[in-house]
Image (tube, rainbow, N blue to C red):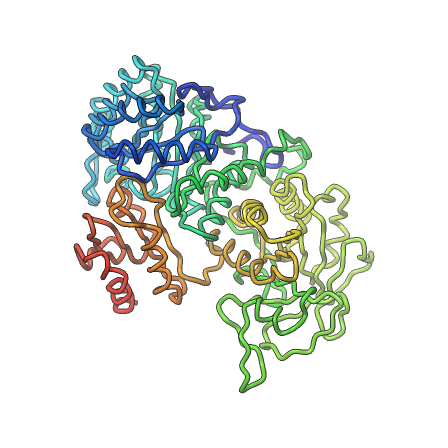
Length: 622
């Protein structure tokens, strides 16, 4: 398995390296970083933004360095920063240009290279390699890479091997496809060269816009490094996560799952917002795991874990009760117990049809409403379930402590506190085989690990009941959004969970409902709206990403299930669109090229016309 203990928090002890004056890995704190979106050649603007990011709390700042001409500006940037009293370690982000990497490595503290485009020429072609041809191509990597290693040794410069799902080389894609295994092998090729050359100041990142791919790739890499006696520190991030709520949900689900595994030494949250806004989000995600190493469970209590690798998706098999579990998508339960009226119903995703005097569902309508003991007399769609502690004409809701010993055949919703798993009688639970369990993660010291333990325990006892994941917050604020996304998201990503129930104050019903559907969409378990893959922008960006993303969302929000990539430039654009149906990519100043999958549909459209043309293309091909 990729880690030794799946049920307790134990941060993996990686090799400690120096990045300027701020070390990374080992026992060091998890570091926070962001990336500028200025033109790096504009020294004044870049320095101002570096200072803004640093003052927000970043440990490192990354800059795009496209060419040797841009790399030459790094000296001026370092000089001006020092003049203003700042000595933050800088990272040069390199694509396509080994010469720019070599020059940058002489000036700043760290260089990021992308295995997919550092040495291999990408033509988006499938090429069949013989083993001899493939080996020869791998050997040729050394020609371009070893000179950089020698410069980094001389100048004590660190390197990040930054592999992106969307920019794997043709050679890797031809043999492995755009898979976590392919990402891992692309990375290991460079790590093996580093090891052979005795170069150890390395950080690794495995990024994708799909949180599941990003998680499985990191786990696969950690497993492979263990097999080859490597323990380099890891940088975590979901690339092109987007903005607003969806960007935070995807980032927290992806990064949080790995942090719970003990994986990760530095974090960047990639939001389509100003870079400084990424820092508090990253800090809050990291703080969710600041409880130190825990040893709540003994790994020997869970022999069933040997059946799973957790490096690809495998859903827990559950029985179907009503429309929950089995092959059904996860359900959403909206807690309207504090607002059992038409407002609470509307905020749970319903609209009122005055002509028919009834409520109708939207795509974001909850499947069940929890009303506690409140009076309720409204006309709802027949498939909408009502859950109450007063079970007359409703589904009954009760706690674990209210269970009887005898077999019960009626359908009930039974809440079990995850924090009390060690007191739970699983033999008793098995008698309630017609019930839906609600696993309350709210007061668990480490909700992800308690949740994992509960699900594996149900397997050991042959319990197949569907299980809803529940969390309750005083209010649905930024903390609640990140915590629920990280903790509930981590369980869904590993195939655990048949539904979700998030509660806050009565005025938070709409937020809780939106958050619930957002988590399911980020985890790819239930798609209910348009999905956007939008990059955070950098110095390569050729238009205003925040404004453009807002315009495109306004025009396309009704397109349920359609994935739209909004990319500032071509570097990751084409590749990250591998997961998108349509693409909007900057290809020149004020110019945009539009894609269906990876096929160009319209080239070099003026930026002000492109959102409308994109909508026309989507309507034409959908």
